[in-house]
Amino acid sequence: MSLAAIDSTSPTPQATAILPQRGIGDRLSALFWRRPEILLVVLLILPLGWLTVVYLGSLAALLLQSFYSIDEFSGLIVREFTLRTYLELLRPANMDIIIRTVTMAAAVTLGAAVIGFPIAYYAARYARGSWKALFYLGVMLPLWSSYLVKVYAWKLILAREGIITWATDLIGASAVLNGILALPVIGGNSLSTSYIGTWLVFLYVWLPFMILPMQAALERVPQSMLEASADLGASRLQTFRTVVFPLAMPGIIAGSIFTFSLTMGDYIIPQIVGSSRRFIGQAVYQLQGTAGNIPLAAAFAVVPIIIMLIYLTIARRKGAFDAL
Amino acid sequence: MPSENRPPLALTISAIAGLLFLHLPIALIFLYAFTTDERTYQFPPPGLTTQWFAVAWNRADVWPPLYLSLRVAAISTVMALILGTLCAAAMARSRFFGRDQISLLIILPIALPGIITGMSLRSAFAIMEIPFSTWTIVLGHATFCIVIVYNNAVARFRRLSGSIIEASLDLGANGFQTFRHVLLPNLGSALLAGGMLAFALSFDEVIVTTFTAGQQSTLPIWMLNELVRPRQRPVTNVVAIVVFVTTFVPILIAYYLTRGGSEIAGGGK
Image (cartoon, rainbow over all chains, first blue to last red):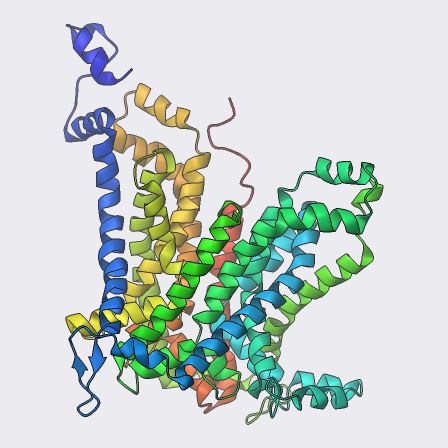
């Protein structure tokens, strides 16, 4: 029953418990109470206006730019609709960049799932009390601490004269390290100039984004199901394979959305740790900056959006959004 | 099931190894800030010294980026606090048409890779011929900070029992008084936590910033330049510690402010 209803049925306001209205604040409150949709509009108009104009507007500008092209002689942007810029993406050099980036994103996602799972599983199932808080902080702090500092730390670690070389020398495993670096494609001069190095840093920086949704999904696995599985004679491994893992899958997919998307859109890490072969992010950054080719940069930036849209569609079907 | 609640040894080891993998690299930064080695990243450090802190303090080129970063982070945080809280107030209790789309729109700036947000803003500035300034940086930062404040505020709004708002209204307070005296004190720590996280995120952001800063240099951009073309490595190490601490402290405060999410204000009836 609303205030208005009481008001209209009571001829003498003094006889009821309703106080007389005292000013603009009261009148506005009464209006919002009677018409909640007005309050909703008032609340949402600023943030939605901002996000629509600044964010969606920018995304539209990105799309628009990607349909422009650049005049090869003057270097000026031709503001006419064309698909020529997108066709340029299909050139072998550019396709290489796209394939390299997607492969790296997949490798990072896989690595993060493998390394992250024990942490998530332990935190969800065995950690109690202060251990639980420790695991939570242990994942949250690296997630939130400075991105650039983390990348920098890895530059120190992977450098030729850095701690890894020192440690392998110490235990007499430098032959193993050199053997790994001598591998074709993923190897290189030193860890900090190889794909292995790039992969390691990506893995490190995005790992917490994989752990948190995995842990959330694992925490929802009811204890009774594990007991039922054990009662029915399943071994630990069987229970894990047929009960725990399928139930954790939406969490893993949710985590993979982050690791995949973040790896695809990063240009700092491969620039600082890695071979000189470029990723999508680097291509975008160089094209819009030194090369001044904003249309091609925009077209390149549309590629991760499309890949992520496909990825999200698949993830949605697998129920990953419930685990976020 | 006490016997079932003992974790397998392999699991414990890999979980702890995983946590160490997450934390040891950061510890290394602190060690390197004291090294006497100036030219390489030699490990172990040949000697230890505290001189680099003084050297970094006296470097004139570090201060303007630091001020710019602090200014951008402060303005972005305030804007995100206002916009995020408004969003959370609208979305927490009501169900309406288009609600899911709006929540997607709020999350999008942080869900899509930074390079897309950055390149989008860059495209828009190019089309509208907006010159780069502090405000072009703020535009980007405030946009992706909204979701941080929103997440914290909306969680608190949901935990607030509706009955305390109704009680306030029954006792004759109007909507604004209820907001001032009932809602705000209850939201306070969640907003503070959200603001802290937004500040940390903005202070540290580099990918979007490189697209929206033009020739300006925030502290992370300064650091990035040093990483690509090192000039004085020990100074970079010291700045890395400053950046780390400036983001770490607000995060820790935010954690303590929002800890213990189980008790519900006004829900103990």
